[in-house]
Image (tube, helix red, strand yellow):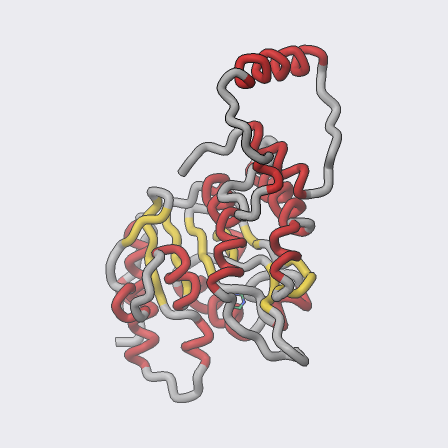
Length: 268
Ligand code: URA
């Protein structure tokens, strides 16, 4: 991934509606020198700040992981490319949990309950996820939970109904998720459900073909599993629960978490 430059950062501020920033005399002198050196090489093209392509990198600010995530969330809240889509709702649901966690879990998009509480995985699927984490010996506070989309996808006459994010919505959100991963630096990522899997892997196969092996995202081991909402269906078979559990066992092994005999045999 290309490293974001100072120019990327300034374009980002510009998109947030910030047209002036205070700088020191020393910084002004450096910028002047860079401008003078660069002007000989600069082609006569239109400014990238007027480019129609959404940016591929977002820059965070702050010292700690928590501050950096908070700065990203603040940027996402006013991010013009999201508003331009006109297909996402207005309430930001950014992430939850520990921004220095070893395990990062990525879902698809906030739904009705998540939007109400401004927390990812706040509804029934989240309760199922909590049960899974508990069975792994983990809590929400020990993991970092995020979604591909930072806003609930809108539908016509929407009440409690949800829809998965579109490819365009996911592509607009992905730079935020990439920066989150760079900040959190998890040792393992688990992507839940087809939308998250397809977006991260740029593939379209079924979950059944993508789970059961290790992938990589930004150099980090990535495991694909079914979405917890899949396990909420009343007729769900034990064998499907076991598949999800096997994905979690693989993640636990990778994280070198202790696994008891009882845990190994769940749903067998
Ligand atoms: N809630 C979330 O936050 N993400 C999902 O993928 C589903 C429900």
